[in-house]
Amino acid sequence: MYRWFDERLSLSRFNKKFLNKAFAVHHSYFIGEIALFAFITLVITGIFLTFNYEPSIRTVKVAGKAVSAAYASVLYIDSLPFGRVLRSVHHWSASIMIAAAFIHLLRVLVSGAYKRPREINWFIGLLLLVVAIVTSFTGYSLPFDAFSATATSIGYGIGTSIPYVGEWISQIIFGGEFPTLHSIPRVYALHVLWFPLILMAILGMHMLVMVKQKHTQPNYARKVAPGRILGVPLMPQQAYMSTVLFLLYLAVVFFIAGAYIAHPIEVYGPPTASTPAVKPDWYLIWVYGILQIIPGDLKIPLPFGAVMNSEFIGSILVPGILGLAAVLLPFLDTRSTKMRYMELPTKHPVRTGVTFALLAFLITTTLAGWKQELGLSAGQLWFIILGSSLLTYLVVYYAIIFFWGRPSKEDAGAV
Ligand code: HEM
Image (cartoon, rainbow, N blue to C red; front, side, top):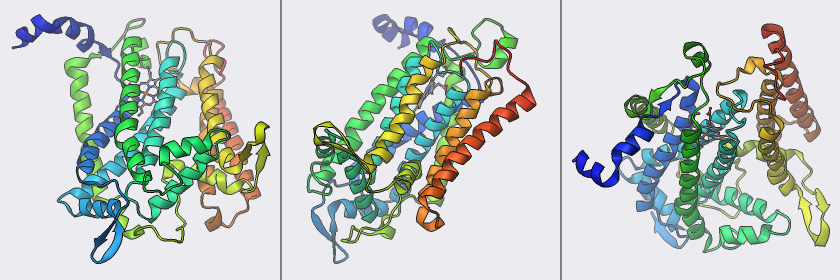
């Protein structure tokens, strides 16, 4: 049978070229794979959800109470055998994909794997992270409970705050001021079709570029086989390892999802006239935190009557500046021309210090999301955010110098 297909499709040529590719082995390389497994799990559990979900806000009666059809269909999913667990697995996998993609980004950052020739995969990766977050966000609105209505109207407000084109973008995404009759079907199409297709296409490119360029080599390869590409073939070793990891991923995520049901919609209930005070999911709280500590009435006039308001500054401009810095990084750090080995964080104190400072910034801006509960003023929170970021940088930088010594001229790159 193999020969029959081989004669027609030249499978052996493909096998020789692709299935024998050497895959470098290092524990940190499994993080990217976990992001990939979470995405696959999202697609599979998502198919189950689409079979039972109704993307409509027409009114139906559940136990004598008038609710939207979308809300009722999620209650129906929860009532199916394993329905609630599968919905919970879907929600948890979204969080895990974003967390794994971010930790994977940090790994690429501290090991210098963004440098030439891997800049393209660094840019594709940044795009992946943004699209993954936007895709997750579009999922918020679908259960149409009090949480989703509030969170999505915040998203609508953020969209409209973009000078010149915001109104237009929000209209396209939400079909009018959220929630209109058109919002749910439109966001649904984006969430289950267009964004997953875009994610698949970008992920495919990410993998192709990685296979073409070959993985950065772990440091042990320098000692074991200097100057040579060290790794296991995709088939069967890498495939076995990845299958085991995927099964392990499923075991852990099913356990977590069963023990801690994500987003129990009956707790939130259907949307009410009064807006409940809800916070977004954990990966967006840092943006919400920034919005809490910049003056709400801030308005910077722009040409042709447009304005930059606080919503735009907090939720698009600040993340945009961080994104721009990430895009510029491979152009600023150009020392290594053909990097083959992972760089050690301890040999790059500036870059490692900045990475930890970024983490401190994200953690403290996330804390600012609890401004009311903490009882701190915006000024005090700004002091904590900027102070702890700077302090973290100094502590990490000097700790590396103290414990590992100053990097040699050869090790210390532009960053
Ligand atoms: C859903 C999101 C993502 C998935 C599923 C994913 C998946 C992967 C996988 C499986 C690998 C090979 C194994 C590894 O190095 O871990 C890889 C490599 C790589 N990824 Fe990602 N990735 C994602 C997001 C990102 C992000 C956010 C960045 C950075 C901005 C990034 C940059 C890179 C780079 C530069 C490589 C090559 C690394 C090397 O050769 O050492 N990826 N990715």
